[in-house]
Length: 333
Image (cartoon, rainbow, N blue to C red; front, side, top):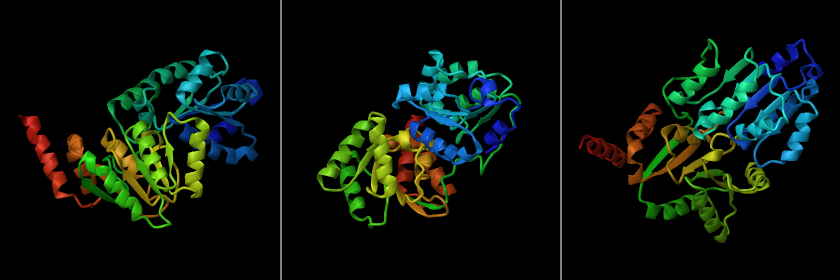
């Protein structure tokens, strides 16, 4: 909303600017499309927006940009491509949003972001949102934000939403399939679940197994064609399928309000991603439940996971505490 106000307050019109006035950079296609959907609600104000992302129709995106727009919503890779080939003018940008900056850095977009920002005018207004505050994100803020005002929403400690009941199951790799089968069989017709996995291969393998058993399921990961990804999200949102198997690619871009369960088949790479996954349920005032499978390979995160559970007043399984203690002793030896 501040961006819309900023654009409307500019004394220079779109034609005089010779380019967009606002740029929103996001880490994933799904999040870019989500932001574009929100922007489209304000078309009656005369604002034109375009969504640019890898996997979409490049030629069509170029045509949309060259027709003249006020707002560009983009993933760094595709925008950098159009920028390097002189299809888009970024020198007219006066309002820049770096949405989920920490995730963009996690995905390796730092180089593309730096190239993009070289073309954006230095007297711009910049808004950077981030769910965590690691060193890489601090460096980005120090490099490209001038005298920033920092606004914290909630606590500085990493905390999972208190509307979600978190269940931790310490198990083995071999037992995972039977555990998820039991879980899926226990679901009611009204339940809707996101199953998070660590690799694309696991997503395909698991969705194939469930489909063979006659269970309607969709999968979402980076190797699927964009049209297939769009269809998967549409099927899940509308309830045509109640189970979505996804990699972390989708863990922040997903905005489905009626998800009842999150199932972490594989533990994520870091504790921040765990919190984001869990946050896909228990939204908009509703309650939710998460089930997380933890194996011996995950023992490095056991201590951090215990802290997250304690902050949210959740039950900490004794075997998770034992795992954390074993890892501490291992580090001391």
